[in-house]
Amino acid sequence: MTNRVVQGRMVTAERLAELIEGESPMEADAIEDADRQCPACDGDVLTVAYMPSVTELVTGYKCQDCDWSATDR
Image 1 (tube, rainbow, N blue to C red):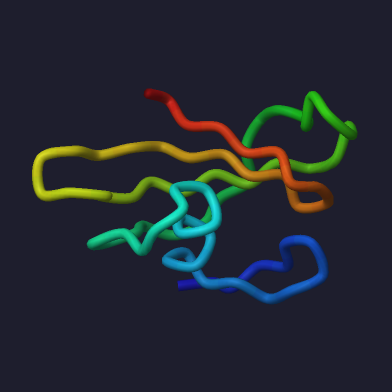
Image 2: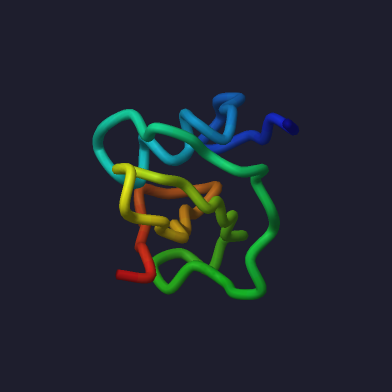
């Protein structure tokens, strides 16, 4: 897995999912660049797919520069 910089800190896919979800996921896939800009600050957005529970797969989005995040729920 590739680590990426988010708000000045290096994060893993699991940590990125935790920043989006608010709690640790069961599992997380690799971090990828999203094909969108942050609506709050126009910064670059990262995406990660993760499992917050056994029965759910969520795609989360997080800005690299500010606190904005969203999911596909």
